Image (cartoon, rainbow, N blue to C red):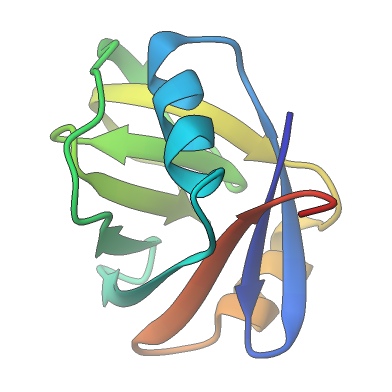
Length: 119
């Protein structure tokens, strides 16, 4: 399944990995688009509260630019720099380089709208 994340009129495509976490996110988005404010943290990620808790499948991982992560069961995180912690990997950006992703996400806080592809 492909997740669309629209930021500043640009669509970031994310290929979701199979897991109960991704399936729960898909079920949530089948009800309609979800718009969330996302904050910048340490110039390495944008994070925002989904407003619901999803199942966690945490593993100790090191993120790479383009990883889309579920943190604490309720936070959607888009990484554009590495970080090591216990996270649930939801998917990976498939249509942008690291440089393009940083440019799209910009500096400071953003608003992101999540939809399923073709919805």
